[in-house]
Amino acid sequence: MTDLEAAGRAASVADAPQGVGPLMPGAQREARPLRQQILEHVRAQGRAARADISRALGVSAGSVTTLTSELIGRDLLREVEGGAPGATTRGRPPVALELVAEGRLVVGIKISDERNTAVLADFAGTILADAARPAPPTRRTLEQTLGEIGALIDAVLAQAGRDVSELLAIGVGLSGMVDHENGRVLWSPHLAGADMPLGEAATKRFGRPVLIDNDANMLTLAELWFGAGRQRPDFAVVTIEHGVGMGLVIDNRLYRGTRGMGLELGHTKVHLDGALCRCGKRGCLEAYLADYALAREAATALGRAPQSPQLMLDALFAEAKAGNRAARSIFRRAGRYLALGLSNVVQLFDPELVILSGERMRYDYLYAEEVLTEMQGLALVDARRHARVEIHAWGDLVWARGASALALAAVTETVLSEARAA
Image (cartoon, rainbow, N blue to C red; front, side, top):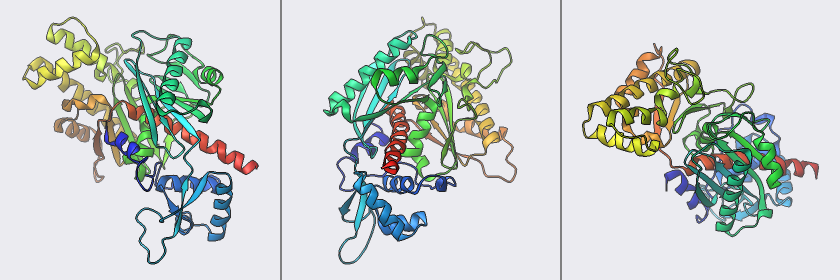
């Protein structure tokens, strides 16, 4: 279990709930209704006193009292004794507020090449259950994909002993070109067909809102809600798994582009008429760096019949560590392409922090000192500080956890809309 997943589990047994969600307010905070700002502040802090909310949001104590009373009446907040975490006061401890986490559940799901994963989370973002199922080796139809999603939902609800009536929304992340706003998958290496209405079909099948997005965005949301990005308004995430993806947070918000399909770092071109990518085009960064690309070269270098990418990469890594020059050269070349891609990210967006994440970050050749040095050398720095690079080798569940954050955000807006209407 990863540190990120352990933190989520620990929240369910701690005296004070662990906060989730962005801690930095962002310039867009004022655009959101004050009820939503209050609720999100309490969720991010875990617990918060009314006076702390007033100071943090810059609103009057009277407004906070009025609105928190409404939220308590709607069973969204509740009062607890003991104050907020870290508060030090004399005399009687102040009364704090926390989210009513029970009864409003979301599921986050990651559709993948080899293993699909899911988590069940409550309204406060605490993980209540998780599940994993093998993924079929071939591309799936829409009906097959809906079946996989349904099996994962049933598994996490059964594990937690919860009823489907408590489930309010489902978040799904998968690789490819995903139109988040319209719920359509224009292309995915996992699906058989193009322009698939996955969001609409899943919403109809399960009777709950189903939000879909690119899996790199899901990992970025996981960092923004549960990880290192909570206290940073701007950062980039580069993922190296079955493909190469990127997510970007600007002013505390996930950036998707005009049509919601930007930041496809893996499909930026690094070699004209180069290696064939699984998207069907040539010269993509992914075609030199993703697991299937390295496994393709490993079969030749090691003189083995092609196997699953994971087995081939494990064998290649072991050979490289043992001194095999051909194996080392494959990782070294991939590292140079990674340096090229990262330097382009730094040059375009100038982030303070770049997070390298994904299971393939177990292979230290990809973030060796010479790789990061080459990245810095390729970028125009002059008087600027170099972007800091962090390595986060989270496990599979972090992707599904990010998908749960997507669902939580949608549920929060829905229940607050109902509160305003009431």
